[in-house]
Image (tube, rainbow over all chains, first blue to last red; front, side, top):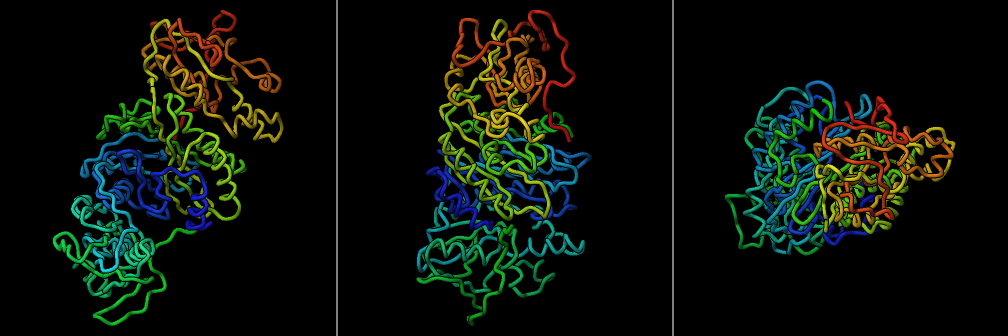
Length: 296
Length: 296
């Protein structure tokens, strides 16, 4: 089944009220928001990615969902497949670094053995408190579409990891993403809708528009690109906006909110449906692939 | 690394106060207890186990940890690898059955793709409320050791699954274990210590004794065996007490508590250390293997 078919089937099961119809990146559980992410070797990370970076990313991906809710990390659970040799020790060092940097303690977890040669499958479940928790479905016509940081660095970093050649800054964006927890705390109280950008700017912006029942137009020339990206990839924003793993925040803000120190305005929501792109004011056709989608 | 080495290393990371030093089957998170379990194809279930039974067991294993805390299920998160064909649909049917029977709604989750041919790795995280939450470390000298239901049926059921031949009741005990939630609610308020039996009666009883700083003696002849077990395996309790997957509850009760309608007294705690066995009053040597332990 595809991810969409499977989730549609899950919606016919008994659902908790905090599941929010399985339409959001995080569920509600009492005073907490909760999110869970699984990373698979060969799918979400490369077999030769350093174990410490895999640990960092595993935690950071979940904390990014908490950032999207304007929440403060409460702690994480870890589901871990034991292995031989130094991988486990290097993983623990990266885990320690990420938990320490983002002030997020370990609550518990489970360890298992995998059959010989099986790809590693790792899960982190993260809990956040004090969430403001704007949904992705709350955008209103006339809202601006805003994004934190720069886009496309992790996608370019994946190329660097694959080729073994390129700027360290891009590789770091891919391997050690920094969840936008502080920006999330600032933006969440202002936002009509918010989510993190994990599968690609275009597909995630389109998802926010669909969930909100609106059309969205993105000015490609407004999308913030880093100097490292421009030097390595060039000035074309298309590879950036269709690549995954940014872990920036995307939000819909009313026109009177312009938090330019924390984010960049890259588009607008309007009545209607669909995603449109412009470049220096002129319409641009959509690329065939908007971002990353899980498929069996 | 072994499971014990890895968990010892995790204890040196920043820990949440609800982690209880990673020494318990469930953590505390606000008003909830939380537990997470990962099942691996080829390790915890057989590749040709029916998908619906795998779903049932995945949830039941976590609910059993909640039962050990005397908790009421609040809901579960599911981390699921999508596949082709009917497996996903059969899984969903079994998931629906288990969630419905145990009145446990779905809160959220994550779906991923696995590389072609990789063994399935599935995780459920379960939340319980109104926990009484006796620890496994609270047994006192003079307490009786009590166990719910019968022991060894799932272990015998695994043989039935492997050979394709044997009683349906044993196969069902292996494939569709029934977490002892009701018994947990009755026993938890009476118990000095409680845990579920997942890796084998002897190893889990030994763990309770070690955690409590006591010795424990088990009367093998008192261990409750089902008629189906006796007919299929015989009257020898040793295969039963060293097999995993029972998902019964084990508890330490003060001598004045005798809830014989809900559990069976099979032993006693005493000052000292170690696990001893008797059969009709005579000492019996320990088997070499006490139960199931994860190793890389």
